[in-house]
Length: 134
Image (cartoon, rainbow, N blue to C red):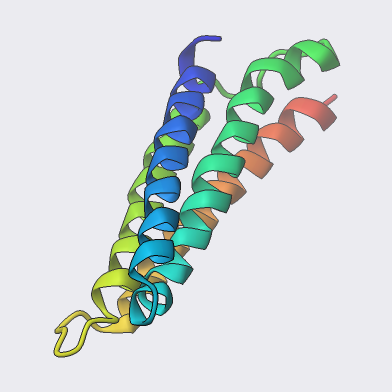
């Protein structure tokens, strides 16, 4: 595995470690910590670990299995950067805005969530163009 696929795989392992640490913190600290960390924990695990692992394997193997060249070899790197700005930003806002007296507004999660959504659409576009172009 090389290129963007490798980057996504390495990021997925990183997010697995972060999500596991957050889960342990939630289990041992309990109470309000569980509520403070839960949205970030879920997204770190699903978008970070699971989705990035899938993206990495998709970029690496789907074009070869389909017998096609990847539509754009640059878009996976754009996808990677946008996703890895959006996801940690989203998680940080969710955690930071839930502390008493925090000056971080919860609505600040929306721009970061928009980056995550944009990154997914970059993936969808690149895969669709790879699989369905004439």
